[in-house]
Image 1 (spheres, one colour):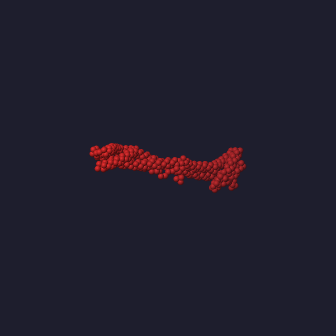
Image 2 (image 1 turned 90 degrees about the vertical axis):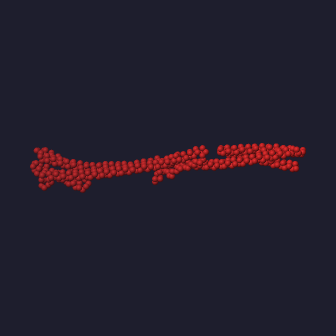
Image 3 (image 1 turned 30 degrees about the horizontal axis):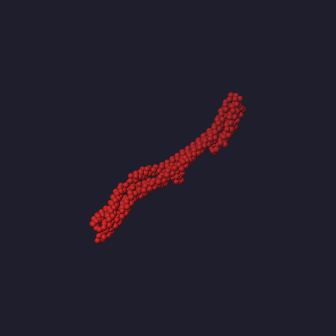
Length: 441
């Protein structure tokens, strides 16, 4: 899973991370909205089922109390007309209280409140009947008789004074029950709101933690990959390139002993995002650098071998030139001795006959050839000395030794040919001398 995520592009990673955090925040907002809606619903239920009923019961209780006040006013009225008016108002108000309680009777859901509502409804109905008896007595017999009926009832019937207090007690109990119920519903709503708040806090905390975790993971992965790339590039600059530059400078100065070793390792693993692509490019740079250093070391080794071979060849040429010069010197000395011997033979045969004169002419020709041979030998010796000088110069100029070696080799070949010709001439002179000696004998 992590490998799959690492292979994604940086933009895709950021979009996925942002989407994940936003999704968690959306969940938190959803729970928050649900909590607010639940609180609104609970508040509406409290108002509809509890507070509105409470207000209706309180109004019924107030109407019952108002009816009692009107009834007392009727008993205390100074004339019959006012008494009838207060009596009518008392009954009408009591009818409103009965109707209001009947309207909210279905809203009572618990057995306790239903029992209290039924008792209050019955007491109101009994109170209306008792008030009817009181007002009838008031109209027929006067206020004193009506007051007695109000306090004691008529013929064992309901007592208005007692029922009025009982109705107030019943409605008060209903109001207390509704208040308790409202408090319970409010507490439930408050608990639900607190739980929702806790859910919001938890989900928001999880979203924050997940966001920080994703941000930390991205920062860590990007930082680690970027650090690996920077470390490799720094190593290439400070070690591989610096060592290669020093080797090339030494190479240009003629020092072929500086060896360069690549020390920058490749990045072992990387992702396929933008930073991973930079790491792959860095590995390619390292491969190219290693190939360059290898080519430098191979060139340095090959050139060292070539220079060593040229030096050995130059030394061999110098030795051969010294030997050639020594042989040329010996040949020149031998040729000089032969020429001297020929001159002596020539002088000893000057006094011979005409036949000897012809031989003398031949000897002079041989002597002339010998002098030419001596001159050729001396020229060969000079060429050998020049070859030696050139060989010494080649030791100082390694770069031109190959061409100069070829020239020296050509000169040596020419010298060898000249020496062979001189040897042939000497042999001819010796043969001529032997022929002259035979002739003289």
